[in-house]
Length: 158
Image (cartoon, rainbow, N blue to C red):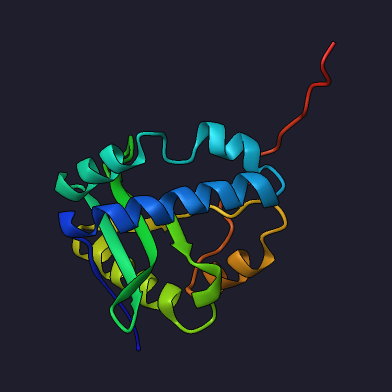
């Protein structure tokens, strides 16, 4: 049975493993993934960053499971906007490819959205790289809409 729960320090090794797999998958397979991995993705040492997120009050880390085995991870944080409102920012969301399509992502998203709402967020931002149709569809099914597109111009080496 699929489920999601708040992660603990006892989950750190599995969270780090899943986070690294997400970064490798994005950078190797997705258009724009290499720059995303070098700029926006969780930086190494991944385990130290996740440990900090587990301890900081304005952060949330969730583990997704099937039959109590960790197959997904997600993290987010609260960001204060210049006008004083709070924005939830989804930093990580990953489900092992063999566990996709069975409700793990939805269970984690429900946990995250409840946490963001309880922490006073007026909205939540998440990312999807170009070509990630399944990810975009997943976010739309969870009530997300596009808010910003980042355009990129690749410079050819001289």
